[in-house]
Image: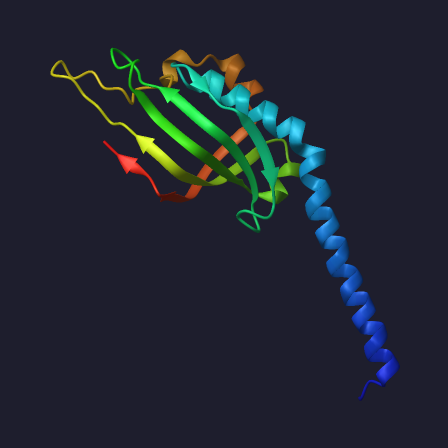
Length: 167
């Protein structure tokens, strides 16, 4: 079965319309879920990290790590734990989290990947065995009410670190 020239043009219009619709959805979808995702990420980080955390901005896009929806935490700094508060554990221009797009329509949003760019990571330990990277709450410290409110699922399958320094 051969298609006529007019049928090819019609098929081309439908395909280009479909591609345009997908691109428009890729621009609009992050804006629809931005508040929910930003609140969930900030809430999760505040509940899990015991040290001070500072960041300048949180942004969402499909275009950084396609096909994942990427949440970028810009200019993030995490203070060291214990006696290492003067040396930040992590200081990065960007920490990005890749989110499974289909999980946006489920109760728990899934984080599938972590991308860390232009970072300084300081891993320190003193003679007494104290370390600066013990920044997370232990399982015993997190109450059941906090975990039931937290609807963020972490299923890390990829970690990419670029242009970074380790000490």
